[in-house]
Length: 359
Image 1 (cartoon, one colour):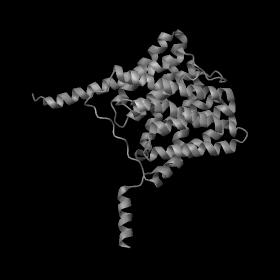
Image 2 (spheres, one colour):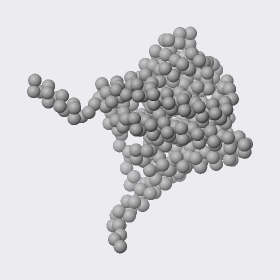
Image 3 (cartoon, rainbow, N blue to C red):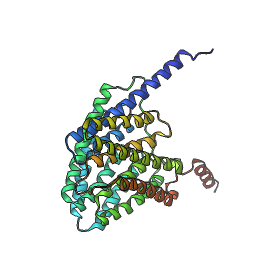
Image 4 (cartoon, helix red, strand yellow):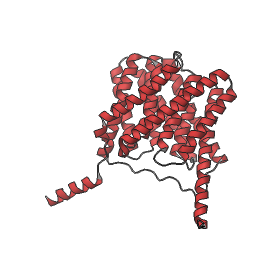
């Protein structure tokens, strides 16, 4: 029987170690951040673990000292700016929507041009959530902004601890940054993503129902993971991941309520996070689906165990229905703007260039 060469076995062992460490790091970090936020009694306890998941997915090889300082500062700046805009234009919702829409467009544009997707995502969360919550309740908006910054600090500390306990193997190269699109393509795709979000912002400001924040955050999670070059198949997969994570969060919440135990809460988060993290760590085309699924699980469970101030109690059926609404709306809206999201075909660009030269 033929055996694999020693260097192949060593490479396979190294890949296995990397996957196991990355999965444990993600599950441990999400559980630690979630547990700390719940222990502190934070009303938006889902923020810290959600930032942890996004941070580890964006930086699997480790976090640099400069990033430990930069991330909370970015969140603080975005939160303060969003609060100022919300209070300044509170009496003129149309102007506020125009301001928020412009910031969201610029954040999407910056991401498509190659700026850190994680950083742009933090700006979008601040400028989508804070204005809506502030219009409904100014004190709650200020509390959300404060906890968003504290959650960012918690996330970077937890991730730094996780990398110290479970370091990345020395031979594991850092992930190469994705190349940015040209200005025209980036602007088109950023416009399409902004058009998907704006109707939600308008509806939630008019409805003034803080319970609908879950739909907005789920839509943001899906949009962040969709690569325009991969089309509708990935969009469907992300929506299935959204449904899977949300349903898991609803079920976990029901068991947590029945047991009424903080230890069981931590156990439920750890087990569920390990299941999602193992599939995220394997990488490949399906990884973004499980990133969305884990984020949705954390969001639904967090809103269940620590309801938002002013939010009404929601039944199992209503929470599942909102997961379905968020997913259905996202795929429907994306289908309407699909032409704007198409990347230019390099082959067609070459043909057009040759025609111009011949002329």
